Image (cartoon, rainbow, N blue to C red):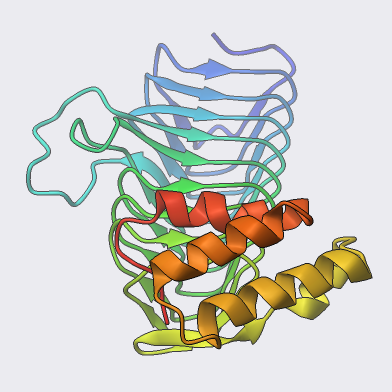
Length: 262
């Protein structure tokens, strides 16, 4: 189904079965597979390939030579009906690749809304990227990576499979992330280690002085107190009774399976 208000360049190929909503713009030499759905007002500039069972939401800007929803690079994949889901208002820049999920990993690769994926970003199978994240040029997520809201991943940075990047994290460029990065933390290096808190980013996002003070106290418990992680969790739980924002750390630590950078 193609909405009459959609623009499709004569050189583009939209296969039968694709669903193209109102005011979508599909530029020259794009290829859209038969199981693709593209939401209203999304723009595919040119030379974009969208394959597989792929849903793209509204008001996205997708730049040339991006490939969305194609076969993943997991050797166990045997053609199962897995998918990609992309939210709204994302900027997906040139040569970005987002691969479909696997049966073993939950069947879906998911991108939220209001994200910026810069040139040559790669999002592998079964990743889950939240909202308002930034991935700079050549940032790479291996399979099953989770990136929480407002995270920033620097250029040329690679994230190991199954890692979690916490909310409001900033990972510096040219880093190798092999363990989970707790929320609010600045990380850098290969292998990435903590370098304090993303205070300026938190201020821009409206965290007040009391919250920032509590976040600093939580960081000191985890990284400067000499406590084991179990001891740190107990101390964080006490701090969270007075400061709700500290629960962000506790919830993150309960999800961590690879261990956190320390």
